[in-house]
Length: 208
Image 1 (tube, rainbow, N blue to C red):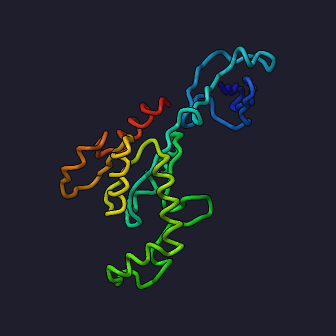
Image 2: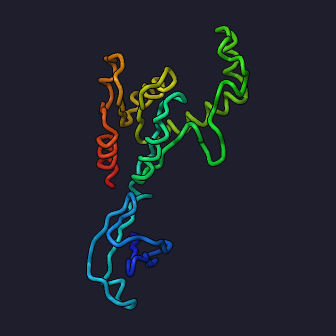
Image 3: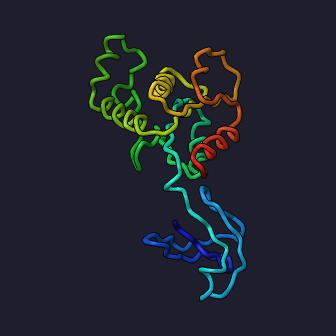
């Protein structure tokens, strides 16, 4: 377990077992995402370990690996990713699948991709750029604990959601705008119109 003692707004590192937490500046009473605070009287430096505002950090051990399935055209997708990360989860973002690495786009293969024939599309799937993009997305999808479909989105995102359902993963559909009804969404663990409800469900599932 990792403990952080707070005094005068500064979180001091306390070693518990083999783990430590780096000192960070926090306002008293403000708890970082994925952490639980226990308030006890604050003493002097020698007594901090026994009498302090203690934060039990559980982000690494209890956070969920979440795959957010959506679309490049969905302007709200980044805010969903950021919100879930603020809750302490490990969230895969297809726009940046790895630090400094941009997400896959057909235009990286051919600027005229929207005019491809079916045969050209099938051939493009064998392109090294397409293979790399597919490998990154599928690896994250296979490893995730939960898959969240953020509407509006298209075929790829729905295929990803279907894979997650078939793999027995926890799945959710976040639909904040009106759209055509979809019967097969009944396969999912949660259908919601509220990002806050989604966040609460994932925090409860992760134990955060």
